[in-house]
Length: 300
Image 1 (cartoon, rainbow, N blue to C red):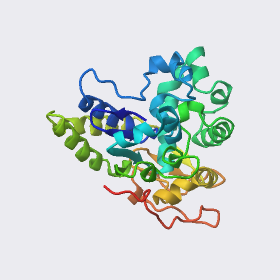
Image 2: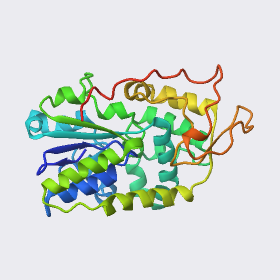
Image 3: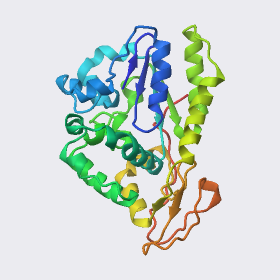
C-alpha cells in the first residue's frame, strides 16, 4: 500500500488490478530519490525484510489495518487522496492463474517459496484453472497471506477489522475508486498528478500499457470455466461481487480467452474473447445474479 508522501496519495494496491503500473507512474511523480513508504522490492521480499518489520506480506500488499498499525493516526492527516482499482473477481483470478503459472513458479527458489507461503503455496495446483481455484481457495483459508496476499478479497484491503471503510478512516481525503475495466480513468488522473509534479505526460505512457496487454493476450491459452468453479468464485469473493456491483454470471473477459463447459466437460459456449460475444448460460446451478451496488460509497 505505497504512500507517495510528496503527492499526499495513498495507493491501496489490490493485487492483479493494474496497481504495479499505477505504482510506477506515481513513484516517478513522487520525485527523484524520494522512496514511497510501504513498498518492498522483489529482492527485499525474498530476503524477508517485510517479516523483519512484522508483516506477513510485502508492504505494497498491506491491508488498511496493517498500515494503520504501523503508522498510527499520524498518517491520517497526511493523506490527501486515496486511490484504488477494483476488478471483476473472476478476471482477477484468471490473471492470477496466468501470472503465477508463467512468471512466478520459475523464479521461486527455496527461500522465496517460503515467503510465498511454503507448504500452503506448494499445495496449489496449476494443471487446470478449476484445480487452481479450488486448491488456492483451500490454501487461502489456511493462510490469508499465501502468495503474498494475492488471494485476499478486494474488500479486505479497504476495510478495518472493525468494519470501518476507507473513506471513513480518511474523512478529509478525496477517495478515487477506479475499475480495471475502465482503465482510461486511471490514465486521466495519473496525467493530472504528473502535470502537477512538473512532468510532461505523453499518450505514449498509456500506449505502452495497452500494447503490453494486447500482446500478452494473444499468447494466452484458452481457459475452461464451469459452473462449479464459478460458484466457488462467487462464494469466495461474495463481498466483492455485492459491494462493487460485479456480475457473478459473467464468464468471458477481454483479456483472457475462455470457454464455458458444462458439468460433463461438454463445450456449451464457443470460444470468446469478449463478454458481448456470448451470454452466460443460466441454469438453476448458476450463482445468484448480483443486483449491483456502490463502489465503497466513494467519489471521483
